[in-house]
Length: 312
Image (cartoon, rainbow, N blue to C red; front, side):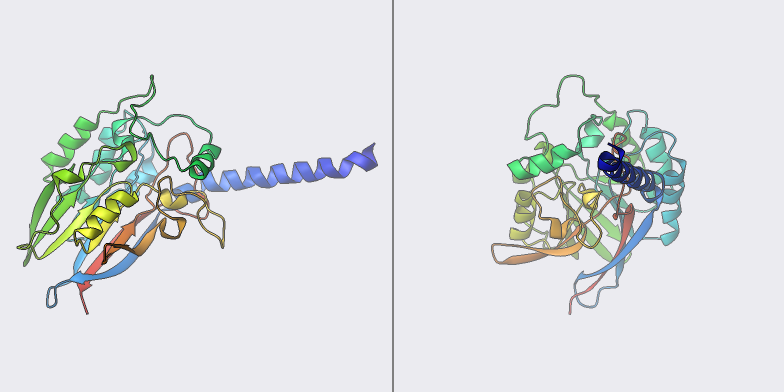
């Protein structure tokens, strides 16, 4: 019996040990191994000075995450021209004060923001395998339905009030402008498409002609939003939501995006085409994860410093 069954038991034990070690690495090390991504995007009119844009996304703050708070505070040392926050700041209804504390030094700079579903609703415990099943079935998010009974409603109004008090612009299905030294920027934002709160008809019409640059901002990069922005002529769309796949396979990449965007564009800079127009798309992999799945594998948490330069 031992000769027949001993080897499979040893193999099973070995696989379990490797799995446990991988989970410990993903939760204990990589999930707190914060990185800064740097990209250059040629979208400015010729002759305009470069602009440094810091994008933060998917913080998913849980009370007590001191290392994450300190890292976010340190990003103010980059001295960006402005900040774009692409949502999902919360993963804990008690996390608003800590988000505002973490972003406090950055709120000394001009900024804009949109919210994601986790700003409105607390996370729920779910089997991670459901993301793969939903992808196979072509389903994503809540499909416009109200959250299930018992889901916690986060105090997003307090978060909004804190951002607004600092002078950041709320781009929830609306437009806004920032005046910087030597230039004027226009922004068009959407509420989260992941829970079908986006209302593009309220902001349709394309870039504002009298601005030096018009940018589009949305939390979840669903194709309907990317198509609308690109068709209208926006040169750059900033989004988050995907967590870069969160748990990736080395040398292969992400398995899911948690939306209908393809996995080749799950994070970083790419392009999007619609109706003969092409826009740059930057998707932040974000710097957090749901409190119920606090892991990252082959996909470290990040923020991005985008340097906008003039077109060739």
